[in-house]
Amino acid sequence: MKYSDELIDRVRSANDIVDVIGERVNLKRSGSRYTGLCPFHNEKTPSFSVDRSSQLFYCFGCHAGGTVFHFKMRYDNMTFPEAVESLAERAGIQLPKREESKSDKEKAGRREKLLEIYKAAAIFYYGQLRKQGAEPARKYLSGRKVSEKMVHDFGIGYSPQNGGLYSLLKEKGYSDELLEASGLFTFRENQGVYDKFWNRIMFPISDSRGRVIAFGGRVMGDGKPKYLNSPETEIFNKRRNLYGLNIARSSRLGYKILCEGYMDVISLHQAGFDCAVASLGTALTGEQVSLLRRFTDKVLLIYDSDAAGQNATRLALPLLKRAGMSVRSVSLAPCKDPDEFLKAYGAEALNARFAEAVDTTLYAIDSLKARYDMDDPRQKTEFQREMAGVIAQIPDELERANYIEAAAKREGMTKRTLEREVEKQLARGTAAERYAEAGESTPYSGRRAAKEDGRVTTQRFMLTLLSRYREAYEQTKELIGPEDFTDPVCRKAAELLYAQLKAGKCDVAKLLDSCEDPDEASAMGGIFHAELPLEDGAQADKAFAETVYRIMKDAGSAGGDVSREGLLRQVKRKKFLENFGEVEAKLHIPFKPE
Image 1 (spheres, rainbow, N blue to C red):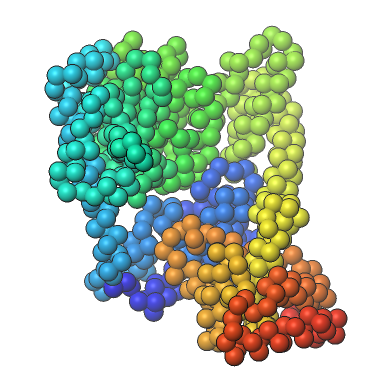
Image 2: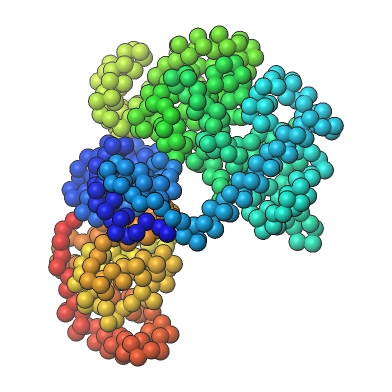
């Protein structure tokens, strides 16, 4: 049995969303709401909004949204029940022992079976590395100077050319449906089943608890792709995991090293730096930062020294800083990555580089400078403009001012000159971003409407009105019902909202709490957190009447409903549409400026 609605309401009521999010995000009051930089994606202009009255949050940039529970789920990588338990503990609320529903038990059972499959696969690959036929894999690892201890600790294995994993798992009784869902096999109609990984060195990817949830397979020689990774499954989301964290979490070093690849992590651990982790083939994500934040607040960033690595450093910096972490960058010049550096100079030299690690913003500026000829006035000017752009990304005004002063001194510029250029970049970037964010994120804008089916725009607008104005429901309940909302997200939101309104209440936070999927909550959150583009009562009444008209016009008859209620609605709709000019004047909502 899930936690009761009453208990979930009590926990939510005891955890004001502004207070909870304010512990992780720097929020500033803006009208009736609070805004800040979104913790789930990289941005310079705040598009993250929190509403105390509705107890909802929503980002107009990446579209993450929901209640305080959904924030905890995203920020701390939790399930819905775990978020409830965490917030109950925060508020000092004693929860009863939770019993899982049949559906929950089935999902948990399926996840356990997938974890069993991956554990069996990891054991199989590990064993294959010792067998005849794996000589090229052993030779490769030996050539990369990977010790037997690292092979054991990281569970490194080998996928043979002739497969064999599928037969093993079938003997253990796993169904084809489950094996296909695992992502370890390719099922082709009339061609049979193939192991997805073959003739590759296998790197198990574990969650922070040490359970194998995916694999990275490295080809030997010049085959493509160089690395083949597991697809996302019910137990694996690459945005929410870090390679090596299952080992690095117990490190006694007072920091974590963030690098790029499997071999970098393994080489660092082998050299005694057992705190190294890596993102999984993607740019660093907010979810990964949240996961890392559980174990440390100090990070050494050691991305590759090539252009891609430097760009990754610039993207990672604001995410890490926004999470309240102390971040410093390590120079590996003249080497490309940690693995290469350790082989050339050793652990002692790398430790010395750690001691010389610099602030990441200054490091990003130094990396930019290396690309320009500072004796050429034009290139020097271009560098200074790019440097101003780097500083402009710093969200905190005081911190930005300090970097302006430090960078101007280092580069021989006057503080005022650099300050003006940063101000230009801020003004230029802010105007462009706000225009883009408003156009892409507000469901009532022309740009969004051009991309989105007009019916969906109308339906979303109607739902927003219904959630803000009880009068909108009272005047249309005999004309419009949930069945008139054809978009899947709008339909579910309408069903939940109309049930509340029929019962004489409207609590959108409670409505969203019924969504344990954070993506579904985000989609609905965008509807109920949207700002209504209404300036006065006359405009509000006109928008309301036109929306009601369009909903009914789009729906046609009563949507196939031949019940007595449906037929009566059809008659009323027909009369409304025929006399719209007369009826329009009677539709009214008590406009409230937002």
